[in-house]
Image (tube, rainbow, N blue to C red; front, top):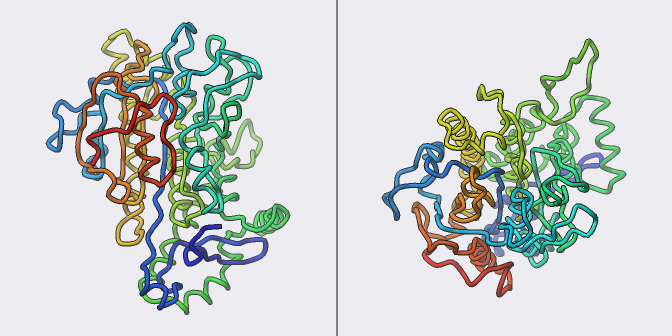
Length: 444
């Protein structure tokens, strides 16, 4: 439970305890007058595989007057709430005597800053990731200490990259040095986790009833919602209606028939995972937004795909796999295709950021009260380089960062310095993180 009881309110129904966003009308007048509730600070970490084509990513100018290059162009609506950071590196993603396996290492190291033990067995070991360091100190304030999301399922064992366990390739979040925090890729299960409420038995009963009667979760809490609406001021009624409309929209998108509903003449029940990758990313991003909005968690990690993913992008008219194209060897046709994939990923990120920025939160927006990192543990995918990584920060973290700039750091500045800076701004008591050498300057 959150330490601030004024931020926790539910709509209740059969087997359901549905969290609500902060509503000013529910705060006692004296309590509100004494101390206006401060929105919480959120942390999010987005991982994209295979690096990017850096010439189309890196701004030519530094400081506030930079122009968004081709790959980053979709971020124009939120440009002033971004930091593009150049020169950051992950030394522990390099071989350092361990030979091949850059993709597995880059994912394992992305949030840990630790050299992964090279093994395809059960003796995996890397380090505790930044999100879980935060969750260990801040997670008690919310229903869920952290949320781990992804859009590509992966294996937890076996050899996935030159002698490295699939656990490394499939996870960026590690609860302990030997235990990954496994991501969820099914939006239906994430939705049930966030809005099922009650005990496991209650959630099962609620789900069974809704499935049998084809009801929305909102049908189960309709009476409670109606009663609550009468207690709210005008602005909070609008906020409540917008929130409930958003929940219903997501629920419909999860439950709607997928492209593979009919296969070989047989009806296949929808799995809750969209066949379209873009829709999948959007759903997961919206679920993260709702989780932040209702303060069910303040910490999220999101893998857009597994390390070394060779996913194809037919909607972009690209038949070759992502990993294959990342090793373009400067072939112009392949470079154009990898740049197109990079641009598409940023389009999807931009949609998530704009949703955060359109969601009111206190006197600002969810994005204003968030520090979100997007990037890869590989810089130039063609050469498997782990310096000059493609790193963005979105949101100023309640004024912690001076955004709207491109900042270049000295070559091989540890990426973990950024994470250490973020943790300290979030109130996490930690002096070092992975291979950090100190906090990151030039952010304020």
